Length: 228
Picture (cartoon, one colour):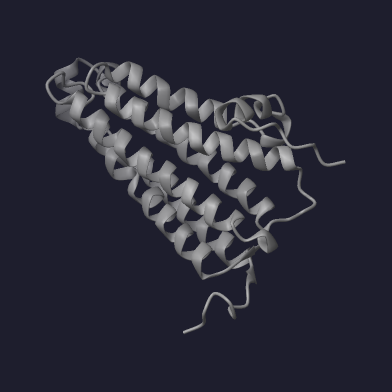
């Protein structure tokens, strides 16, 4: 087995292609949880529109997770604009991330099935949040494993972008944990935090230079000079 010292790093093309397939399958599976109303359901609800309206928890779960997975895919793409080479450690870290991504349709289905039930919606929302915490944790691990090898980092990419990614991934993990705990108190607040985090992470990291100051306050360090 090849040691880290002698292992020859490879480019990211195969890793990104495999990851893209997993993301696309996971995001496609989400729609399968929205079932067509049966004839009995339509009759019992008093028509097709009322029957479709009873599927509101499924629509919420689908829309939220679609946005979450879509933004995660965009961030995964951005990550490998900065990491241009990979080794076995990066590949394994990426596999743990994809484990969480491919799992997301299941907690989404649990959330949709129980969001309308006051007796079980808190537990379902906490379970959903726990899945997002895992994905956020593995995103952080992937980034730190990759950037720990300076030879893998594209030096031509802006330094403020690297700092922004570091900040966002760390803050997202903390906020996902908080949102998951809040699920036992208020499911709507919990889901709103997950949604707001998705919105925040949707912006390009290269345009959020103002986040450097926040990172400096958190870490107690001064912002590094920007690339020319």
